[in-house]
Image 1: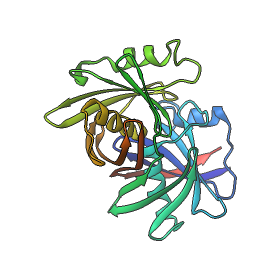
Image 2 (image 1 turned 120 degrees about the vertical axis):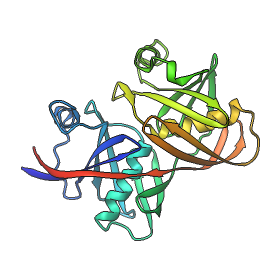
Image 3 (image 1 turned 90 degrees about the horizontal axis):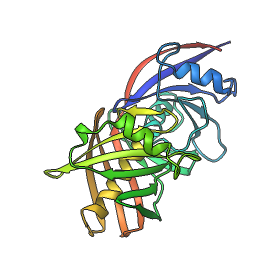
Image 4 (image 1 turned 90 degrees about the vertical axis):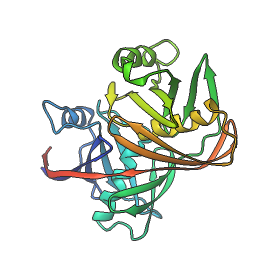
Length: 261
C-alpha cells in the first residue's frame, strides 16, 4: 500500500508528516522506527499523523524516532500547522488536539507559526538543575559555554540516570551571554542531540526567567539552537506558574513522496 507523505523541519528538527484521516497508516513501532532511520529510511526526528477529531480542525499524533508514541512536540506542532493549512484543514487559526491537550496556532508570516503551548504550573530544582514539563518533561542546566559541552555523553548520562531512567527526560544545556540564550538538547526517544527542540526551548525560556530573576509579568525570549532561532512568550504569574505560553518560529517544507508500507 502506498501512502503519501511530506517532510518538514522546524529549525532543523525534522519530521515525516502523513494525512491519516482515513486511518490507513500502520501504527507499528518497527515500521515507524525504520521510516525515521537516517540510513535505512527517510530519516527524521519523528513521525506525525494528522487525524480527524470531532470539534477540532485535526488531531496530531506524534511518534518519536524510536517508533514509540511520543508526548507533545513543539516544533512538530508548528510543522503540523503548515501541513494542515496546505491540506485546507483550517482557515485563519488552527485549533487542534495533541498529547497534552488543545492547542491554537496562527501563521504569522509566510511559513512562520506561532503556537500556543501548555501552561506550566510546577518547576522543581534538582541541585542546580531546573525540572519542568512543557508538554514533555525537561531538565535545564545553565553552564558557562554551551558550545563546549559533550551533549551526547552528558545528556545520555543524565537521561539514563537513576532519577529519570524509567520515564526518561529531555536534557537541555543553556548559556546566556550579552542577553542571548543559546541552548542544545539531548532528546529522549531520539536518544541523541537534535538541532532544535520546541518544548525544550520553552523550558529553557521559562527556567531563564527564574535564573535571571526576571519578575515582569509579560516576558519574551529569543533563543538560539544549532538549527536556528525561536521566540518564546509567556505570562509569569509566579516562579511556579506560567500562562499564555507561545512558541514561534519558521517551518520549512523539504520534499514529498510515497511510503510503501
